[in-house]
Each structure stands twice: as structure tokens, then as C-alpha cells.
Image (cartoon, rainbow, N blue to C red; front, side, top):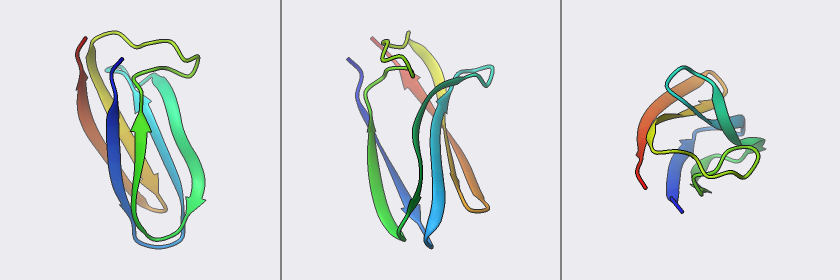
Length: 79
């Protein structure tokens, strides 16, 4: 199994959404959608989709939204 830890900082008490999407923008899994206190946080992704199936090797994107802040980071999954 592929495991990765995603680290993110929340500046204020905000609704935080973290999802993994594939190259064409389809949602693979939503890891978080909840209000969080300010500060540094971590979440683990086990390399599975919303149905708990292992993903295939390839390029994916982590999309993090917190209030008006939006960031996208590329991740490469290798088996």
C-alpha cells in the first residue's frame, strides 16, 4: 500500500476541504471536509479511493481549500 502524510497550515478557524483528484480532475477521494482550528495539521492518505480500492500508479493532485485559500500539489503514486 502507498501511504503519504499531507501537512497543511490553517491560519484561522476555517472549513478545510482536502481531496485527491486524477489528471483529468475527477475526484478520487475526499480526505477531509470539516472546520478546523488554526495551526499545523497532518492527514494520512493510504492510496485508496472513496470505495477503499487501491489506486493505480500515476500522477494525482492534492487540492486543499481553507476559506479563500486554495492550493494544489502534485503527487506521484508508484507501486
